[in-house]
Length: 265
Image (cartoon, rainbow, N blue to C red; front, side, top):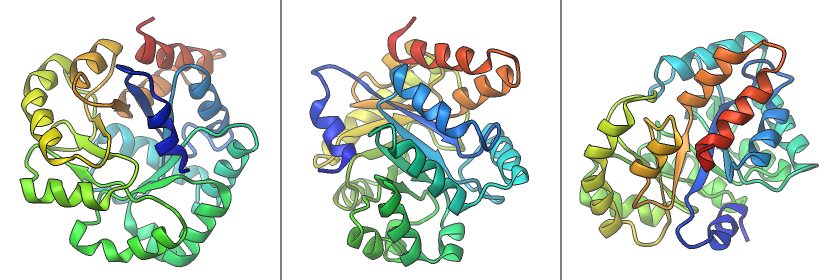
C-alpha cells in the first residue's frame, strides 16, 4: 500500500493530517534530512519536498527566496533523490516531490520516475501541468507506482474538479485562494473557504481532501481545514526557518513551531 493512502487509512476520526512543505536544500544542503525527521517527530504526517526551479509560476516571494538560496547552494534533482534515500534509512513518512515540469523534462521523465520510485518517493505534485497535458508524466508515474496529485481552486469548474479527483491518487490538493503561495490572514481565508470546501466535497468523492495556501498557525488550520481531511503549510514554515537560521538553536525553534501547528502548543 502506498504510504500516503496508508496514512489516511490510519488517521483517527476527526484528526487533521498535517502536510509540511520544505524546499529541498533550504536553508542549506546539509539540513534538509534533519528537518524532515524533526518535523515527523513534532507532528508532521507527510512531507512535500520542493524541487527548486528558477522560474516558478505558483510560488510567492517566500518560496521563491528559498528556492533561490537552494539553487545558489547547488541543489539538483540527484541531490534531492539522495536526501529522500537518506530519510528512508530512518523513516517511513510519506514524501511527495513538488515542483515544476521543466526540471523533470530535462532530467528525463522515465528516468526521473524510476529513480523516484527507487529512493522511496510516494507521489508527485506538478502545479504547472494542466490535466489535459498530464500525459507528459502520468504514464511513467503510474508504471512506477507514483501517484500524481492534482490541484483545485475556488475558480475550478465542477467538471475539472471531478476530473482532478478521477486522475489524482492519494489526495486532492485544495488551494484555498486564487493566487500564489504565501501566508495570509487566516481568518479572512477561512471566511471565503467554507463554501469552496463544501463544493469540493460534492465533486471530490474518491480522494481525501487536503487544503493549503494561507495557513500559518494551529488556529488557522482548525478554521480553514474544518471540513477537510488535513492541511498543508509551506510559506509560514519557510518564514520561520528564515527568521531562525542560523541562530544556535534554530532547528529547535523551528520544531517548536511545527509542534504548535499540529497541536496548538
